Image (cartoon, rainbow, N blue to C red; front, side):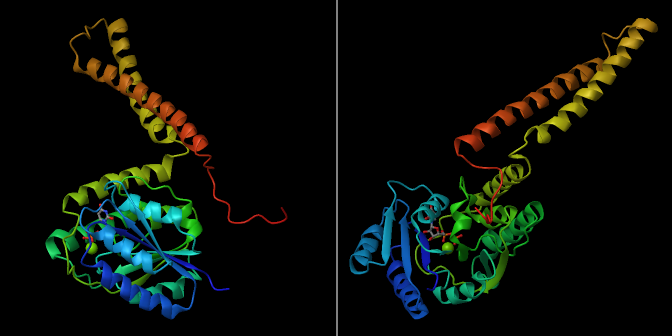
Length: 314
Ligand code: UDP
Ligand code: MG
């Protein structure tokens, strides 16, 4: 039997786009000849998006509509979709007609050989200064920091093997980092060029402020990648180095005071020494606190520190 598909679409106030989106999506999916479901996640829209989705769902039992009580954000909407998805392959896309459902077959061609196929909006149709420029910088930064090189982290049109996303817990605005997080646990990632349309209806839900949030999320993701199972290794070395220098300074001042008989009370070096010792101590303590939190984090979620691909003979 062919592998089944779940299409996950976050919707926040996209009433004008939905009918056309549904129609074009349906055309493509029916043409594929595989079992599928379309999961719309209404992220607390206050326009008539939900009513339109309910009407669509009433006529089509392949459609699932999840509606949030309030606006929780695109990441939360995607996470809900992943949770409910039953397909072997999960495809995410935007509801605003900027992604083209006709690209789905091209993603699927690659999903047999890869775990994540990421869309790349090579000819992106968004404003240059407010969107494309920050995005070039963000993609470069994310690629360098995470070590997973993609041209277009921000493209929602992506295909995933379902076990990949089901194993990732999302917070903040972290959906864009799924490929990077997945790759750290061994997933194979590739890119496929996809089309991109200008937004025809409604307005973008994001402004330039998002860039700053992306940077903060990147710091979090990087920290979690490197240190989530051993936070003391992040803070410890700095603590030991600072404390060590502080200790040497104090040792020197003690020598000066005791053996050379000089006054040290007014020396700036004394302040520096004490400061470094305290800082160093605090860094180590922070690392230890981190260690305790890490254990609570992993054990409370029953989240192992490894990912098994398969087990033979058991
Ligand atoms: N979206 C959402 N919740 C939000 C913001 C956006 O579900 O709080 C959805 C939105 O309806 C669209 C997708 O996420 O389907 C991408 O949003 P948008 O098109 O505004 O982002 P852009 O394409 O401008 O980056
Ligand atoms: Mg858009």
